[in-house]
Length: 177
Image 1 (tube, rainbow, N blue to C red):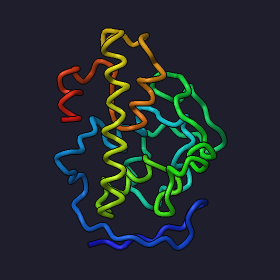
Image 2: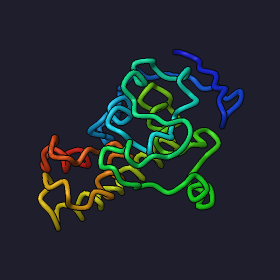
Image 3: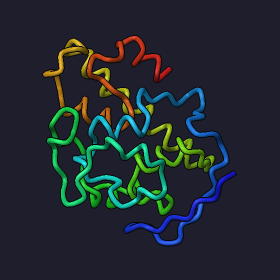
């Protein structure tokens, strides 16, 4: 077990334990990319995770597309804005004190081994519900046609699901089964 103390712009003195092995995910949660891969591919306009490097492995940031000053959609894999701002998530009660930055922060901490049973189940349920975006793409476009719904593709990537032709549609569907 590793105890982590967080002191960044959004949390001061938050303490949690990493009780599971890094990357040990339950059978019902199968993102197609790791947090490291997400940061390298380009998510959240590069604005996310710019002040909390001390909490996560240094290699996550070696090739991460980040911009600490402002959101830049050109840093996203699909070069589009596909996320609401922090205020939207706060106003809709999607954030908890444990992870004031939202789902991706939860995923990073979960991937690193933190476990909070009921909270984790809620976040995994939210993740499973994003399959609807994959179904939308599949019903209207060839999954490998990157011009088809880039905003939904980028949104899926924000949730750990890569839909750019590198993962087959069959494997994408399996991720949610």
